[in-house]
Image (cartoon, rainbow, N blue to C red):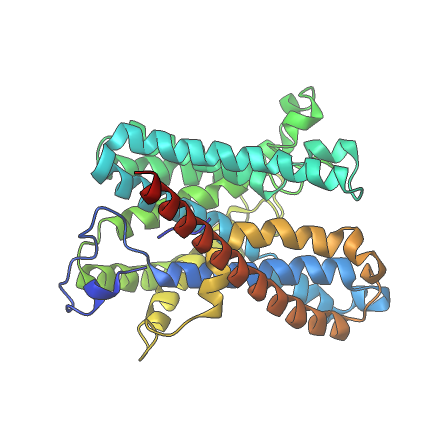
Amino acid sequence: MAEPSLRRDAVQQGPDAPADLGTRAPRRGYLDWMRGIAVLIMIEAHLLDSWTGGVDRSTRAFGWSLILGGLGAPLFLYLAGLSVALSAGSKSRRIGDARAARAVVRRGLEIFGLAFLFRIQAWILGWSSPRALLKVDILNIMGPSIAASAALWGVMRTTRARYVAFTLATLAMTLLTPLIRTAPWLAPVPDPIEAYLRPVRPLTSFTFFPWAGFVFAGAIVGLMLDGARTRREESRANLLFGLAGAGLAAAAWGASYLPSPYARSDFWTSSPSFFFLRTGLLTAGVALAYAWQLRPGGQEKWSPLQQLGRASLFIYWIHVEMVYGLIAVRLHKALTLKEAWLAFAAFTGFMLICAILKERVVRWWRTRQQRVFATAR
């Protein structure tokens, strides 16, 4: 899920140094840092939900913990959309627009396939039911949304057209949500399909409306970053992200107090105001992450958050089994909230170790394959 930080040689050449001189996209470390934040929030949400029990589940502190945990999924989806534009832009400069779009569409479909593979694994391991194979979770939404974003990117031939397409897609997924939630014509649709459009218990954790909107919104920001050719342009873009994101969040917060134009709309689930509030905060967050990377020594230091961010899909895959599965069955609903937070700290450290080991194994394997290939020649 990680997408390539600004190359060190480009950073050291000054504010007008090219941000994309090579044949591959430069890696922007601050986006990995944001993915690391998303990983922390994801672990916090799942672990506290699974391991906290008793009266602590009804406390205000637990409620605020769940609200914090709710920021993880929008951040992952937003960054996935951002990566669509960066990846497609990078590939297009090497292999052309059409092939680049197809490559990113294929990646989205692979993630969609992984969603079902993950459910099959949970069923085989004994902590999930066959009906849960059809459950709509974040990967079920992320994969098709990535594919749709990449397809839109490929169909639109100019950057301006892509901006318009992603903006309209974001608005459609958001503004139609309250209408889709109450649409009577969806009632006859089979539950496994309807669950992708609006909540159907117990099949739904996420739906395309409005969650796919975060992917399209992230793609807008990705287009701007992909167009930044110098250090100065990237700084200017991030300044715009900070101002625009804060303004959008403030406007959405203010709009939430106005009468709703919809017959039925709930702020915490289907309200466009809540969507744009989170989108504004995420956009401003990109600027904050960029500023954090620019701190003295920030680009040279090893970052545990970037390490987690680069292994985000791997950590998602293994941590859900460890938190909800049979491995930790004795901990399910067995801890106080304080104990759960301490467990979160220890578990995060363990996930960091796993991410480091995974990266080293991959590096070792690639080096070995290169040596085998060189010997064969």
